[in-house]
Amino acid sequence: MHRDPDAPAPRIRAATAADLAAIVTLHTRARAAYARARVPDAPFDTPAEHARGHTLWDRVLDREDTPVLCAERDGTVIGAAAYRRRADPDTVTLHQLHVDPAHWGTGVGRALHTACLHAWRTAGCSWAVLDVLWHNRRARTFYARLGWQPDPARRPAPDATHLALVLTL
Figure 1: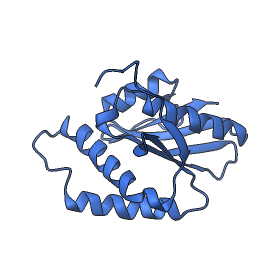
Figure 2: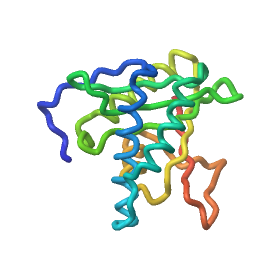
Figure 3: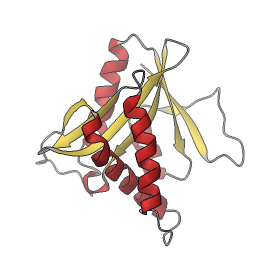
């Protein structure tokens, strides 16, 4: 999808337990979309994937130390992000940032990222880190455009599936 200049900016807010089903659905759709780019015929949007996503997000939404933000348009949740401070109080880890593929390219991911940056800077963090799937070129490009760089302290192994990125706040 290409950026729609007429699309209203999403509303970013704290997620609640009531958002669980919507977050699981958009997360499963997003994972299926980027995984299909690598393995076109594999069934990624399955009941098992929904169950796995439900378990993951239920745990995340229940953690007091892991803020979850969601993006919505017209009352529909279309994106979500979750992060956690590390043992080093200057550093935060972005664990999840997903946008429903129907809304890719409409500014939802950037709006979630901007909200995260604001929260991290307000909390006094100096660094943010994340791991991105090596084969997810769309996500790698997204993060590069926002200033994320490969983490020089965490070089990928030759058989690595993830790339560690870092952002100076």
